[in-house]
Length: 621
Image (tube, rainbow, N blue to C red; front, side, top):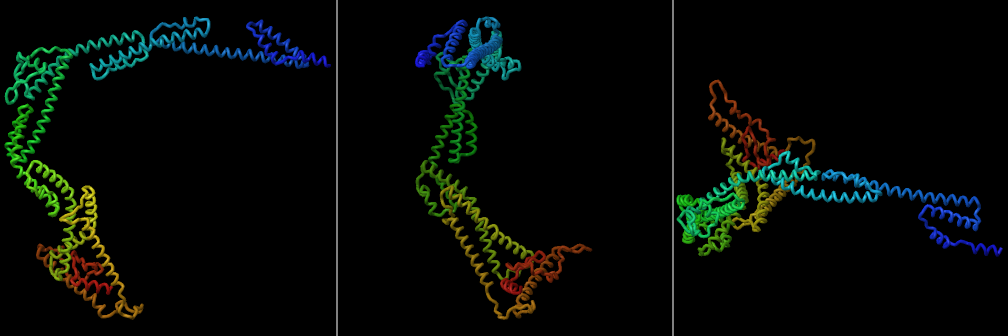
């Protein structure tokens, strides 16, 4: 047993032995694979015997080994087949792209030559190399066609404002990169250049004539040249006031004045165009200067009180923009400035008078007026006139903002004045002795004043307050008239009104709280009309007096209507024939107890015993 164990230890196979075995069994030919399999099986059998595998286990191990070998071969075949399919797919894609570009650039097909290779890798490489050549050729031709298209499009637009349908279609073909397409562009470009040259010759002639005429017209307008060029390059220039000499005349003007032929070159046309622009710029500058001078003259004419006929005559003689005219206007300005300086004191006095008028409209106090110190000084200079005019402009602007507020203030004062007049009229005990239409008009006027006081005046105060606040925020000064701040006056007025209302409510509440003088309670058995003789007679006395007043007014009205309208024979005047018996139908529920006024057939009657009426009717009811 010990010897057998030793033998087994001696013949035991280690992992290193297996590694060395596999390393030495590399094969490159099918025969090597067979020898490897036989050697592996021999070694495995020895191992299995040493291990003690049964025949069944050995067969299973062999089957597993052969299955693994088969799977390895199948995996290798599958992966290799996939590589082949990928190469075939790439060859097809590159071939399709090659065919497309060959058609676009007009090259003959070389697909058959590219496919004549032994391996797929070589075929794919050949396809890719040829594709790069085709794409480079296409890019080169695309750049050429793009530049030609831009050039041709520019020529089209030079000859016409819009493209025709055929021209648009020709320019939009973007998939043709053949040499024939390039030749088509070249041919059209040459045709358009010839047509442009033909039309340009005609247009240049017309343009030259137009430019020359416009330049000559500007000469006349600017009063420049009237003579011809002399031999010493000096032009005799004619102005409106005489001839002067001008050195360094440009070459264009020399040629035009000498009536030399100007060739139809682009350079000559550009030179004419530049000269025209220079003259137009000169014209624009002179026009602006003429306008400024004329504005200055108008201001000076107004200051110096120039005669209207003289002004119109001067303007008529100085309508142009020649140097002589502008120089004459400048001279006139100098003359008027001298006149203005001589009239400076008078001018400043006029401005001060205007300032005083503005002050009067603004209702300034003497202290406020003295705040403008220059008006109190005896300084009559140009600077002083400027200061006065600036102050006048600012004051007028401020007055324009104050005028709407002043109108509101005046309206409020008018309402207060009317209210005071009405109160004085109500205090007159004989105010209702008048008769006829005048009495009715007086009552209507009183009602109108009440509406102004009760409805218009509160709204006017709110509107006035808002306008004053807005004015003070805008000008950062207090709004005041005649030295009184209007906003404070409004606040005081509102306080007075509020206090009067509170006193009226307190007085009315005190009357209502007076207890009855009679200690006898009013029971249900007492008749509604029972009472003291004074209680019975008070309302009846007031009503009798009111009836008497109404009767007198109605009778007077009837007589007045009968005298104004005499009916024809067989007709009766129904409009004004109102019997005096209507007084008996007087409805005392329509009498306004607050004012003591009753409306009877259009006539408003007010009791002369107003206080007695309030007391008697209140107790009677």
